[in-house]
Amino acid sequence: MERIKRPHFSPQTGFTLVELIVVVLIIGLLAALVMPKFFGKVEQSRMKAAQAQIELFGAALDLFRLDVGRYPTTSEGLAALRDSGAGTGKWRGPYLKKEIPKDPWGREFAYRYPGEHEEYEIISYGSDGFAGGEGEAGDIVSWKGLD
Image 1 (cartoon, helix red, strand yellow):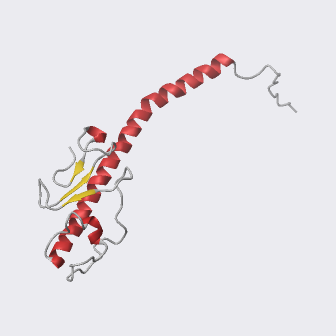
Image 2 (cartoon, rainbow, N blue to C red):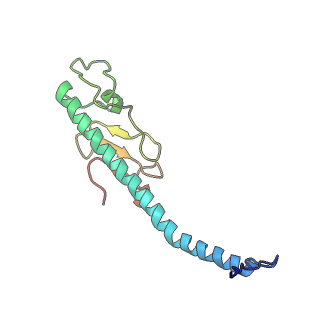
């Protein structure tokens, strides 16, 4: 009967410090290549989510207008899609099933009626929360799509 030889491990067996550093460097390089692409996709998906939400608000506003005969005023805001408010006797809502959501960056959507570009305007001010800006910090608006 033949004996199975098992490797003999001494207390000195293991990885050297140099080997560990090389592995950590390789992992760091891979992360440096992959992470910026991943985070770019996250911001792009936030922008697309804001645009989709604006389009859903637009559909709800059109239903509101069909029932009431006008769009909500700037002072009534998007809240008029959930609550009947004063002076809207023909209101047949709620026109949104859930509470008015915030934009993907956790801020309120801006609503204006009448608008400067269209009859009404819905705006998310992007990642920076201020009007203007470009890229991730740019405004997402109801009167034009994402570039």
